[in-house]
Length: 261
Ligand SMILES: [Fe+2]
Ligand SMILES: [Fe+2]
Image (tube, rainbow, N blue to C red; front, side, top):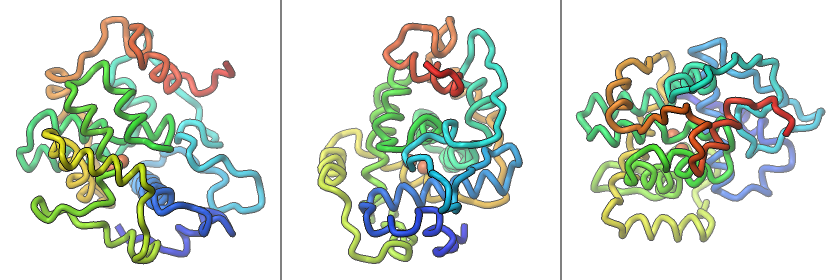
């Protein structure tokens, strides 16, 4: 995907670019690219009111997609919603995660990696700040431990190359933010922990598949992943949000963005 540096920087807001950490800027860029990707493929992508409009009040950048100002009407969820229902009714078009899972599938990566790719960024609909950590907690009760572990650490690993698997520091970050960007200490710490952990590749493969998942004009459906979800995602019989799990409230929040309390 081609990104217009000036158009992107305009969305950050006049005068704020210098105040953002490299991590914040990289997050903002990734989210901008995902939104552009969804806009190209599907007109149902949320309208991101406020973006680029420097006059009116802005939603904080860390707010999730479902909670940004828009004209979107949220379709009601079924009484016992499944992961597939969330994809269809709340995460769609979700092109970035679908493309990354499709790449994992096409290159014969383990099924749990395919699932991790499919789920790795869907929490951005709820919240963007520290999305690896939030995303891991959202999924933890329902997926094998290595899947949520990988989701947690894909976020810090994005900033560090690994020649052995062919993951390079994103050239786009250099172009957008300059070559002297240094991630914050907590990001480096998390990276070093993950790098020395036996499950390192579970997170690293997510970052690798990520780089193949910003293809304009490539639309992927959820269909090829239904069996893998069935085998590895513990769908609660009560429905996501109603099983009293530690993250059930997060699923309810995604289901009901308009509730005032
Ligand atoms: Fe991510
Ligand atoms: Fe991603």
